[in-house]
Image (tube, rainbow, N blue to C red; front, side, top):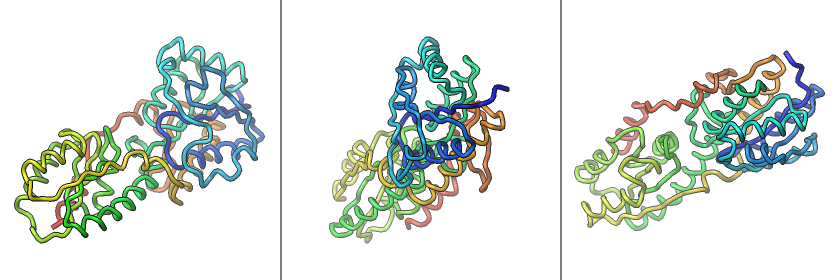
Length: 325
């Protein structure tokens, strides 16, 4: 086993709150073990283009509380090709990087898996995505902050909904996963939650509006952006057509869910995983995503971590239905 001397760290894909805390933990843990650390800016695109910078303790000072990522992020079509990955590996060798910590989601880990296999470089992944859609961890870095952002926004929307006896259809992120919608639906007391994993949401909503209580002063419907019937505007048009007497409005929360200071939970999770990533590389581990399951560090091969399960927690769906009566 080649002794690791210089660890490269980068963020890729959509940003998520807590990525900076993870970068900080990787850098300071590596320095604690007298290892060099190199930051790779703008993800795989920067890896190919040679956008590298040595990092030290000062590089990561005063960033644990910041959202976004100081290393920036970008998507790279070149890296999706064998030729692009070969160029990336050439740059890694040029900068004497012999191991990587990749912070991101399924696209990031798909690329990391291929790079590690094709060029025999150890790569450890940290789950940085607000969608919480990776297998191998109870929660991903950024998910807790994102759902708290949604709940705070919906609480404010409910204030105006109650003032005008309105139905608000609120769209949250989740093109392929309804986990943000489901958890925030429970937390915000939503009337209904529409998810991409099930086709029952719209029918249930129509039934509830037709046969449910008529004396409610406000109604909140949470829609994941990947819902099968369409986004919030499409759902809103369907509701308005069937129930023209209901004052229906639509609110798209959009990218505010990605920003903001990470919560305590995300900062601690990111710090634990950043520390564990360096320890894992020192132990000779590679090709794995680190997560936390039942409070303990867990190791999941990349090929398993990126396979999002279409199964949704049916009990949580039932809770939304029962508690919205």
